[in-house]
Image (tube, rainbow over all chains, first blue to last red; front, side, top):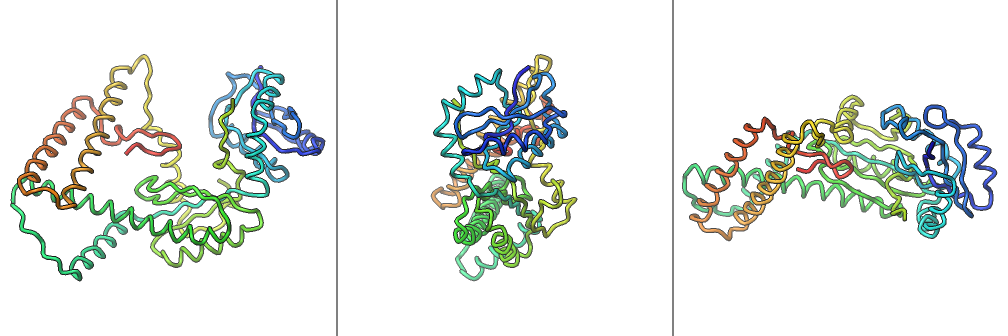
Length: 251
Length: 114
């Protein structure tokens, strides 16, 4: 039997509050949950057989449910699904070795929630719009088009060049959406992480960490952005525990 | 994702769910190396790297063409080279029974390779 860690929670001087909550909760496959403490940090764990730890949807949801419930009352750092240690002693030693770094990360996420924003487009429609705009700009600038040879190889390069320019146009467009969003978020003191072009349709996949009381302002900022980019679809989700803002390499 | 976690949404939930599925569960593009498929798995891995390098070369070449630093003769030769590389790649994919999608390996949290 090994011990699976769900999260590292800041219990300050009050571990009893955590123990009370854990006594009412169930972990993966109905396993009991308890805390392993070191100073002001508790590792929230369940005893589990490695062979029973299957990374399927049901287990992942149960795992997330535990973290979600804890996050309602405690500042915590979610652990990656399947983080196993062999004994209570090993966990205490790990907490001791990494104590300063864990505390530093806990302070960073204290009183904050994570929010996710995905921005989707219709790729063909967006390409057509950007191409039309680009062609209009070229006509306005009235630059003479250089004479080119007509050959199969030159045609091949021309086609590739067209694709390349279109990709550049899309990236510039995505950067402009991110710049505007970043402007809104700066006023909320949010920490942001952006991923561009996760798929052809998901042009932006972003996560933000911001104060719990700024949820309403975030929604307003996203609404304002959507009005400016009416052709894009926006999905804002949260609040979530800070899954994407834990930066510790456990020693 | 439970609906009460959605704070603002302007698309249809079905479409969004499908898109999120593509980001988070790209099963078919994962590299699955096992003792039974070592040959084809290795071919997939090698061709993926070759394709990645070919695409990078192509991108760099287009930057240079776009920058206007190449002569017509150089562009002509570049076109011939890139076209032959692409055709050769198509042959290799056919030989190992692989598609473009197979070569776009999913790197988990980092997204797709290409």
